[in-house]
Length: 476
Ligand code: UDP
Image (cartoon, rainbow, N blue to C red; front, side):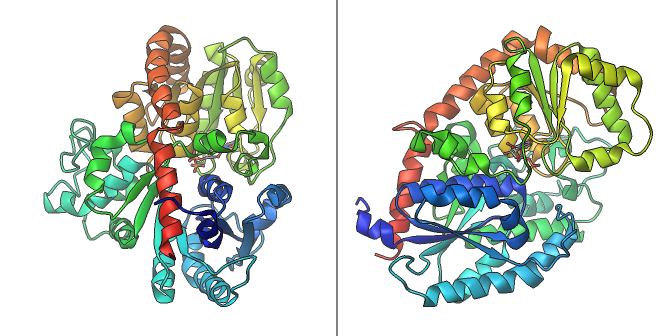
């Protein structure tokens, strides 16, 4: 049954992202897609992030059914709000009660302009939303930002403990992990996230991760930013655990396919930092497929030694590079002066910038490779743009992503964790020169699968229609 526009206009979805850049952007994409289909969406941010996204609210005039709300996180103004225990505590102590109040008042205020909420789409990391939604009798759909194979692995952690595969001694990290169906031959101890590298299965970090993953099972559906065809081996198993799974990836590409004019997309402007437009002029001046783009996302921090090693590796590789160096990274530089040859090498063929419009950069014709921390958003953006990667995973789902990218899809090369300038230089030359043709050819195939999935008849496009229809039916 198709959803009528009348039903659509009565649907009101409340979306709450975990308050970090890598979570806000994909959920904004989803919000836009739902609004584009005529649904009302209330997008809830913490007040701190809401204020940083002021430019975005100006653009939202194009989306009359999109409403922004903000709630206090209880942290001091100058708090860095990076991923850590203080932010997690703030979620439970301050954000949760404010979120509940907000929902209660929207349930009461039944206006024509904004009907009461039909359901909540919560970020999978915001697990308190399950309690709040259940208390208020609202269905909750869980949007999981981390990569599907990582999530599936987290769901299988109790089995791994039962089978004696977890915890493991730290001596041989290359031992295969066999208890995650669909990941046979792929997963090793070293690919598991940091909270698995513990001595006791009762370790609070591991138990917390298990609890958070199991909480997802309370969702009436799971939404994933992944492409069914690329992760079917795991998704087919996950389907037995959830009433419904909607794979909508690559979400940013799905959004572009629906709204056409990317300049009007809120998500494209959904950066918590301001970009440097001059870097596009610099890219224009570079030869086709010559530039290595370098970004370690918004959460990874580097020591001074790591920064200097990467810097030497980049300069010594001889390839032009565009490097996003966030202020958090710069603080790792310390007071000591930067070696002169790095300053000179950067002037000759590098461009260092605080923030860029990453999708735009990756789509630029000068792009030849991406040195990345293997965050899932960055990986998907690279796949859509068809740019081969060097993966330097650092935390959470990065290890499983880089393993899949390098060993399964063969669209990237893995840089070892404790790398020095020589390793970095060698890896850049491998990607940009010796292995270029081979990796680019695999990338072209994977990229095609991803891009096809968002076109008419593609799996993600179809799942989006199903999601819209199912939300419409929730209050029918
Ligand atoms: N990003 C950006 N400009 C930058 C650096 C990052 O727009 O200069 C965006 C990038 O496009 C991606 C997000 O920030 O959408 C980073 O998400 P990811 O999952 O890759 O990593 P995280 O920051 O969550 O570790």
